[in-house]
Amino acid sequence: DAKTTQPPSMDCAEGRAANLPCNHSTISGNEYVYWYRQIHSQGPQYIIHGLKNNETNEMASLIITEDRKSSTLILPHATLRDTAVYYCIVISGAGSYQLTFGKGTKLSVIP
Amino acid sequence: KAGVTQTPRYLIKTRGQQVTLSCSPISGHRSVSWYQQTPGQGLQFLFEYFSETQRNKGNFPGRFSGRQFSNSRSEMNVSTLELGDSALYLCASSLFGGLDEQYFGPGTRLTVT
Image (cartoon, rainbow over all chains, first blue to last red; front, side):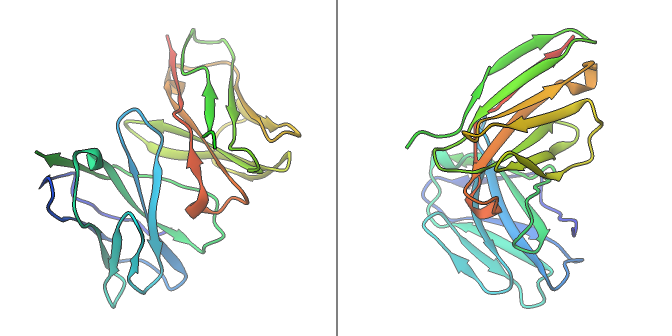
């Protein structure tokens, strides 16, 4: 699976949009981009995933660049409960069953 | 419906001992995956069980084993504990194993002294 690079930390004001970047320059054609988050003392939580089109669900939007070498997770109106570590991972095929997280981005939502 | 439950939540063991961790998946879910999470290595996949059969396995030594029962509850066993086994052990359940439908439990924090 391709390697990803994320900034170690970010701050966002409450109520504003949080834009979390991820670089995956070695991604191959059949690899999906997945985003998870982990709130302190809880298990990881699935957020969204995509292959090449932008995706939106009730939690977030995922913007993938045309060359697929990077993506951005957007939390449209961040709340204090969105403070967590966000993980961007690239996985080969939707049928994969394994997750491996790196360091992720620690997002702090500031009141 | 009730979420994924893991017991115990916290555990302290001594080197050389063995430990068994338990995971009860969401009702109706047939897939249970186990992960180890440490500050240094991040989240790493241990194995996945589906309908009582181990379907996928990560790169961990044979000291790590698991099983799944007919009611989909799963146990994970670690024998001959080492200091490096100190970690948060997470289990995740899903209907069929898809990553977009996995629900994680709160984890068991294992400390080996």
